[in-house]
Length: 125
Image 1 (tube, rainbow, N blue to C red):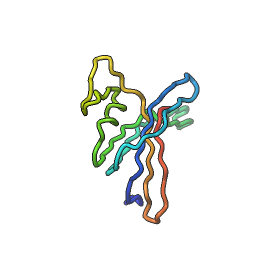
Image 2: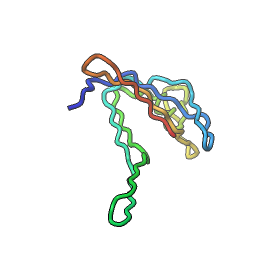
Image 3: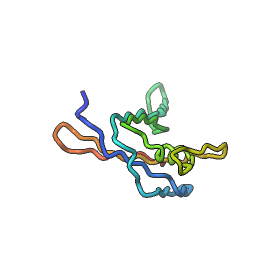
Image 4: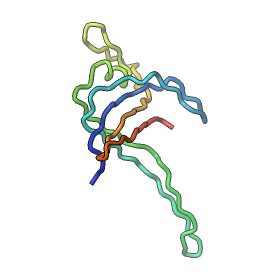
């Protein structure tokens, strides 16, 4: 049983620069909306090395993660930002074949049963 009772304060930030071998920079975080549920499913690669029929080395490496969000309402402006579309100024969205979804960092906090919080940041590394 999980000791987390809620998820809140969900924010996103768009990647602005990506330096090869360095760190990325992100825009100022913006709120996504009221969060209902967040699940993160990591993909891990494992490797084993055997010699003389005995395990000599074992390594694990994070490969990627699938993130699923459930929110009360996902504002059109957030959808446009995270999918690389534009708003038309009249309440609609403009889709183009040249649209490019940027990398997005997610930030949120999870409340624990004892009243404390765990702060989570998911970003491209």
